[in-house]
Image 1 (cartoon, rainbow, N blue to C red):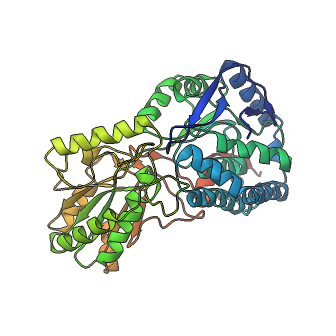
Image 2 (image 1 turned 45 degrees about the horizontal axis):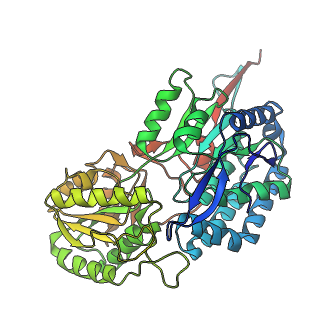
Length: 478
């Protein structure tokens, strides 16, 4: 198990002489102690990335060679998915199967973008018979990337693969709550011969290492997935430098369930959308349900019945469906929001407390009904296994409720009427709309936020263009 920082093509011994204990959220036992990167390591990482960029290693790399490099990484990720998945489960809490699938998904991401290395086309723009004008996609330079803790391995892959296609070199900080599994990447990069400096992995707390990274003058571009509050701090820290940023932030995703919906499918999607995926610790969780009164009783009865049967447990326990929250701080955050919901007058239908286990950060799947639209639990991202249910009388009211928050990352509509679904999707302010299911995704599909959920797109070809800048070149022919 490698616990050092990966800089300029190798793991280096600690300069700070400090490390961070990484805890298993299921039992609070130490999984390992990762080296903490401070000023010395940070300077080395940015210098290495800058050298690699100035050498034009990625920009001048043959598209076929870049594709082969990324496919080799994908293969190594698949070879190590069992080992990596077990470790990720220990430090992150998700089930071993989910974590193995995360490694497989990361491999699929590298494979997908390996197929795009020779398919990013420049544009020729006519503007008169005597001129030649063309537009090319170019990198920003050194990209600082900060990865969240809920899906660290998969988000790492997307950030890196898209930026490598454009030609950005990278300094990347995995999350301090579950950083060790990201070091599999460093080992893999060494094994496949990734050129020195194009990717540098540094570990540390967000408040110290993260802030130092953001303040460092070596970054030309910042990619961040996390909370709007931290994104705001990043913008303040970099305001004088005026560098581009790419943010995927929080969400308060709503599902609208019309009277003609398949209720069983809506119930299954709710359980899948808020409870099973990492105990609701996902930015596109179905944290709000807007359901018509004609079907509400049947929907709620079936939803509560399914929720009662969910097994709460550790990631390595057979049959686990609801895994622990990532930390004791997250446990307290969720508890505080639930207390706020009760105080607001919402009806606590099920859950609302810590799970009856002696160890770990386990919280009961929780459903609130009769929630006021302006209640705190209806407006703020909880990031836990908690959803709020609302009534609506007509389509306009449903849209107004869906759009009532400051977020706009994802949403969903359940109806058998495709025309109504399109009408609804056209009016919801969100970057992703799902119909009659939740988590309909793929590497070739773009996603991103509206409003406080951020800007920029990840996934598909759109993601590549979102991580670069265009240059126009014009020539007078005669």
